[in-house]
Image 1 (cartoon, rainbow, N blue to C red):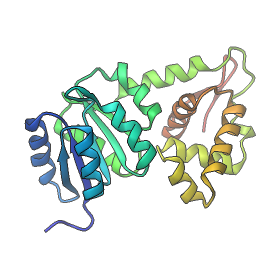
Image 2 (spheres, rainbow, N blue to C red; image 1 turned 45 degrees about the horizontal axis):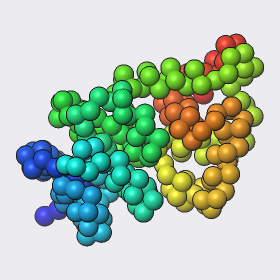
Image 3 (cartoon, one colour; image 1 turned 90 degrees about the horizontal axis):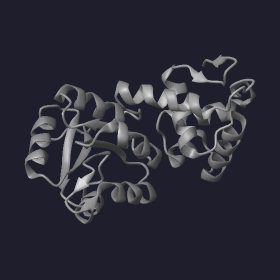
Image 4 (cartoon, rainbow, N blue to C red; image 1 turned 135 degrees about the vertical axis):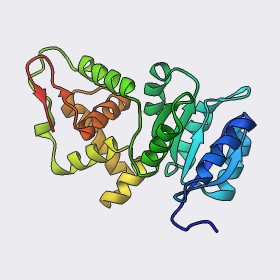
Length: 231
């Protein structure tokens, strides 16, 4: 009998052997339950409506279709569903873009099963997952995104509410999830994010996401050439 506490996972991959292998792996763990499988976008959307998964394990290549199209649809229609991309494509080429689109984790297929399970559990728990290599690259890009000679990080200018929004953003929460957690409207969340970007000198939502992710993880965040801001 399926445990009520088990997280419901939908596997979306165009290779039957991969889907069956993942199902067998997850079946060995009582906290994870495969609620469905799909091999293309149409079937995936139908399975989501049928089984209401908590998380999706998604391959980027779905035959002639692009998994990115499914990610965009899900972030519009089902922002509460956690997405872990499991792909053969080089993470250094794809992970940053996909994180900016709203995925919650990226792991390559050649990783060990234990690491895949760790990634999936982190994503289900509301955290972000990327490899150490991607983590280091995000830090480097944050540093480069700051204007040279900037006087400070701007963190000290954030209000307590803005810091809460920044922290939840760094945890990978969607706008709707942040609004619910902080008892405010989604428009108010967006307004806080704009204020945060202005105060931190960030120029896009993807830069804010990278900055927030590093801040929440406890890593130093760049404050220009004069000093390093720490949480």
